[in-house]
Image: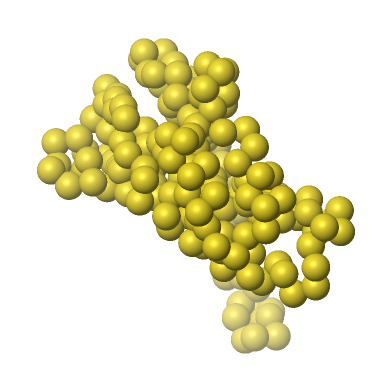
Length: 183
């Protein structure tokens, strides 16, 4: 008689399923190309610096830091690819802005300069800053790799970003200054 697991499945079937699962995970880990693979591939094929380094480190290295994002679309021949890549770039840009603002908020909260209840208003103002900043963003460069993948760089000019932050309501001046720092 076959031994059964408490759930009623034969033990050999459970062991077999675990072996399949583990071997599948091992294969996916060894064959999945990571970011480093795509970066080294891009570097070998003449990709622009903003793609190889990442846009924010690239602009910092030029001495002209800008809020930015890079997006991609798999098929550059599809008419919608350009829009898809630009939208992905704007999504990355929004994420980068949110991360910067959240970092500033954490620093201010740990320093004790935020009053109780003030952080909720600032979170709402952060959403406004991000949305308004995205309206001022524009694609400034693109590149297509050998496989036909289209990459688009979207930036916000620093003066537009600073103006957007300055005009945002609900942010204390110290938070506005901290967010603008570096751009």
